[in-house]
Image (cartoon, rainbow over all chains, first blue to last red; front, side, top):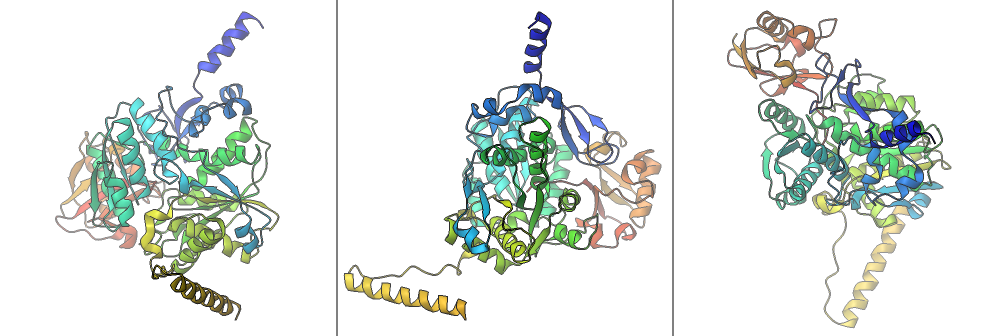
Length: 436
Length: 91
């Protein structure tokens, strides 16, 4: 190796691969600042990388030797320094499903279980870990967000860990678990009388005048990159292969698109073989502007006023909705919606067959998976990955009254035996009812 | 009709860094023209080549999205507040 080659290799390994922000609509380029929309056309800005540098830097072995968190994919994330906030986020289990798969008639179903993501039990810890690491690099001392709950939990927790001041905005009707699960980290918590879209508007107005780092507003290009790790991990956990079909929830549409971007980046740098992956999305009927646009063959989103128990994905005016429709269409996928009863059935089905208690977004995703299988839109042989993005302990209200009651008994053997007999009889009757 | 307009950060370069402007107009279309008269160049940012508001830009009248009202024909009255907000993702 000549001196020049050695120097060039060393300089490439020090060089960061992320180069600029670029408008997804008109292609205008911007420096890597806290900026989220194009000044010319208002299209969303996205981080662009130099894939030649990335190809030189990354390898399967290098990633496998990295930390057991999203930071093993450090080179694919938009951070300038190595001073990242690592709270153990990521590398959640990818479980081969047996019982749910059998129930649905699928042969190769996998569950990506972010219900146990750290530290706050939803996929949001991925995006917030990236956003707050970048916020620190950009010099923000106060961070903020508009949230349907999970993002609030995550921003408050990781800001606490990083020692950043935090002010979080949520709709005032959120589930108690999500409110308490934010307050415990002692941020300023604003419960806004209105739905998420109104909270978002207010936050944008606050962002105009307060110089804070809003993870999903001015830090959004960096924040949303964190979702790519849900694509990276699945590819690595499948043995450096891509699945055939992905089923994921759609709220703003960002996660859905970034899983795809993650797969594409792994293909570009040669970590996995190129392959067509179908992308199918899940929405709750009471807030399904993206599913409606998909079904009607529209390339624009008509906003709706949310009315569903699936609050974590109740975004009536989804900013990345058009891109989600585009993605489902170009990958031969689908976007489907289910009603609230089906959402609850979905939560119960996943719990009873796989031992995973997910929240309403996960219930929506499982119910949509079932609906797509029944409609023949998922081939039983396809390697299908369903993304579970949040934990059911946070939205207990949703299933109250649908999961039965404990059998209260005396501390006596015969009391137990009588109750057991009754429980078994009830169980049999229930099955008979199902069969009828 | 005198209405207050909340200007998002990326547009404040047209408004001399003002976050709130007072403007005239009987509806959103007229308001946009009135903004252009006050801050030349701003209309090209607000609207596409066909003169429609850009698809990643949301307009609110008194906190309601104009797509739930009468779109760009939404009537304005004295004291109304119009907010211009770029689309936001997250959740």
